[in-house]
Image (tube, rainbow, N blue to C red; front, side, top):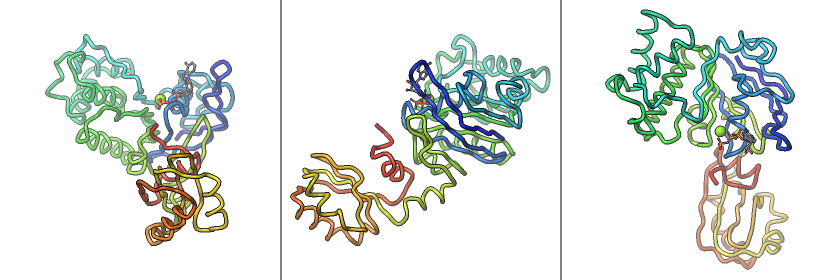
Length: 309
Ligand SMILES: Nc1ncnc2c1ncn2[C@@H]1O[C@H](COP(=O)(O)OP(=O)(O)OP(=O)(O)O)[C@@H](O)[C@H]1O
Ligand SMILES: [Mg+2]
């Protein structure tokens, strides 16, 4: 179990993580979802002991990561965002290196090397040099190195970036399996579909702050019955505010000259009236998309910006 309380991390004048608190439970996947620069890797660094928090506390299975760092680290496995592999060694040698670093020896080490290469689909490439691997293969090997010692707490920092769709499904299955075996998994991603499909609970972070937190159902409930309607064309901002200012079913999330984003109750049944109101407010509508409540629409509603930018 991981307990993060009022965590803050500054780099000089920059506050990368500002008052983040959450608890990740045993046997479940806790997601940290946020755009580039949100503070995900910094948070992972503070949990793994790589970075010292400026303020706040982090406990791993009850051990404070600063004061009892050896005990806290003993149960941790980390799969870093920056791939940490030796290019001039083979896949097998890389996994062996990490296994030995975590104290595995002899028959146990050999058995685990075979196991992790097999489950990541790399057993037939065990003897090949890693600098001849594709990006996706390196990602899978990076994952194998992180779980070689069967950690009880697993930190995964964007483990599927650059992985093809098939291997991604396989990697996500492996992550789910880890949780099913009782591992506490912390999973960072900027892919909202991934967070939506794999995480039991999650925190959405932006600029170092948690902006929403809970189970998927709780977060979706925050969107309520509202769909997100994105319209492109040309808009008169003040006219739009005047047109929808008193309409309880429509909330303007963002609007500029060329783009308007609205949060609309039961949008699909309201499209004709919505279009009429937009045109009546001096808008020209060129394209319109309606999205069901999702993590992405919640993020847009809370921050006024797209998650992927
Ligand atoms: N070593 C460092 N020195 C100074 N600033 C840093 C350092 N590492 C990260 N930052 C800054 O801290 C903020 C958070 O960075 P972080 O790497 O934690 O974000 P992230 O959510 O992991 O982003 P990404 O999705 O791009 O990996 C960013 O503004 C980044 O520029
Ligand atoms: Mg990162």
